[in-house]
Length: 363
Image: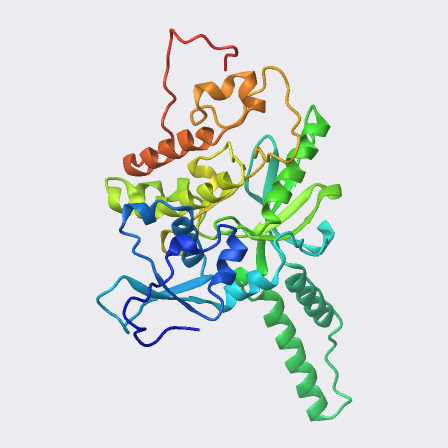
C-alpha cells in the first residue's frame, strides 16, 4: 500500500533498481501502490533498465507517478498502477487477439495508408463497427413508409429509420478503426510468410511502445494494428527542426522501447522516421517489424541479401555474416540517424560513403 507517513528514522525506501526487469513483473511490483526512491537524476539510476521501464510504463499510461508529499525533501514518489496497467497484468504476455477473417473488417477506402514491396496498408473498421453498419444498412433498406398503422407506430418506424441513417453515416471513432497490413508473397514465398509471422509474434507480446495488435490471420496473410491518425514521424519531422530539446524528449520514448527489445535480444533492423508512429504529446511508437530479428526463431537468410532502408542501415549490415550474427548496434546506428533527421528537419540522412572500405555486397 502507499506509504503516507514518515517511517522510523533509518528506514530505507526501495530503489527503482530493486524492481523486476520483466515488464509485466515490473508492473505487478507497483500493484496497490508503492513508494520508491526514484531519483532518476542520479546517473547510476537513470541509466538502469528499470528506469527505462518506468519511463515506458508512464508514457504508455500503465503507471502514474506523483511526488510523495509525506517527505517532500527527499526523492520519493508514489507509483500507482492504472486501470490500463492492471489490464496488462491480467492479460498473459503471449495472449493472442481472437483470430478473425479478413471479411470481418470493412475497408474505409480503397486508397492506401501506405505500403511497399512487402505489404500494403489500408484503413479498416473494426468487426464491431462493421456489424453495426451492416445492421443499420439493413434497417434503411427495409424501411417502407406506411399510412395504415397508428400514428405512434409511424413515429417509431420513422425514428428507427433516422437512427439507422445516423449510425451508418456518422464519423468513425478512433477506437473503431485499425490499420490492416496485407502481406505480399514475393519471389521467395517462405521468407515472405516468415516475415509476417515474426511481426505478428512480436506484436502479440503486447510490449509498451509498440502498436496494439487488434487482429491477425497468418494463413490469410494480414494483421490489423491500432490506427495512428497523426501519421508517422516523417510527417512531423519539421516540428522538431532546430529544437533539440523537444526532439530529445520525444526521442527518449522510442529509445526506451528499443532498449526493452534489446534486453530480450530482439533487434528491429528497420528503424527510420517512416516506421515510427506519433501518438499524443510527442509519444513515438515503433512499428513495422517485418525485418525483426528474434533470437529464439530461426530466420531464412540468403546470400547477398540486405535488410532495411539503404540510407539508414549501417555498412556492416550489408555483410552476410551480420544477417545471422545480429547485434543491437544495428538499431543504435539507425536511432542516431533518426535523431539527426529530427533536429535537422529532414526525412533522410544520406548514408556515408567509405570508398576504401572493402564490402562484400554492393547496393
